[in-house]
Image (cartoon, helix red, strand yellow):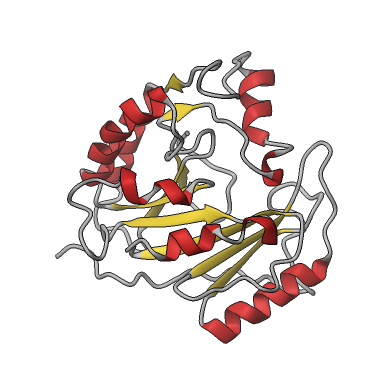
Length: 252
């Protein structure tokens, strides 16, 4: 949510609010929960009925400044939204703030917004009315898929028109050998890091890399399990960090 980010596949991170509820096994060691609880002293993780979400302040103005600075940038600057919440969570604070977020994104056309969710089944009913038949050219929609138990998320994602559809295979805690990549433009692979991280089988990354090559999907190997960001980034001695080509031309 600051000017600098340690996330290798983006330029900025932006959080419209903070807090969420865990929904699958990939959430077990949620770094965002640890960050807000241990460093900020906030208790924002849990069901809507018992926990609130905290709307941020400074990041909103930061995003406007990034947009101004990014005018004419080549390559375009990317913004990951959101690392400390889920934009599509069904929570009163999220539902009340989401229209304001869409207004900000609509006005920030110099930036490519990378919106990642674990709730892709809620995307269709929570898009702005002017999303259109192809989506906004500067918005990439993604979903997290940590193993085959939640592979169904890709089905919901591929049904939504978007300039780029992407899958975050992080934390990778199981194989995704049977994941259908039809309509998916980008896969980001990352083993789990941080306290209590779960191990990986490197064949998971190898198989996904091969599947992406066969499907024409860009593949980004972020890190191996147990490594901090920007360490353990090689896959079999190579750095494989590809980016997708948007399906929709940018605004004239």
